[in-house]
Amino acid sequence: MAGFYGIKSGPYLFLPLIGPTTLRDLIGTTIDRAWFPLAVGEPLDTVPYGLAVTVIGGLDDRNAIDGQLRKFREESSDPYNGTRDFYLKRRQAEIDALRHPHKDEAPKDEPAPSKP
Image (cartoon, rainbow, N blue to C red; front, side):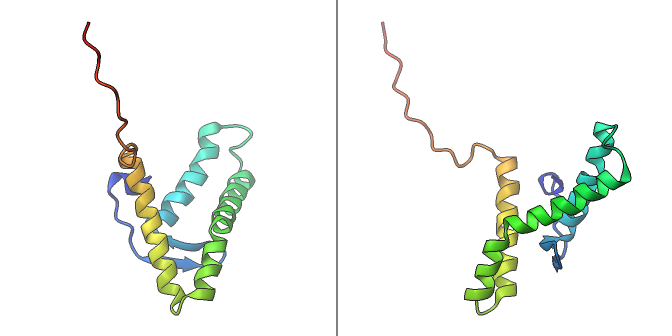
């Protein structure tokens, strides 16, 4: 969400268990996942629940892109750069979709209104 408001991504990171991310996304995701249980309240506002949500959410995100990461490692002459480019382009596309949700929709051909 921070990217939506124009916060720059910061350095690209590839972290064990987490995978590709940027400093902005790492901090923002951690804050979002820690804040959610507090916003909902009891019984979800406990430290064990917040920690579990953060860890499991991070692993779930990593698992979602695992196939693409394996493809880069197997097929690319430079897997690091391929992964970085893929991640940064995908995140920018997600941010652009939030800013302009109807940009990719083709205009619908509507018939002209008939005159009585």
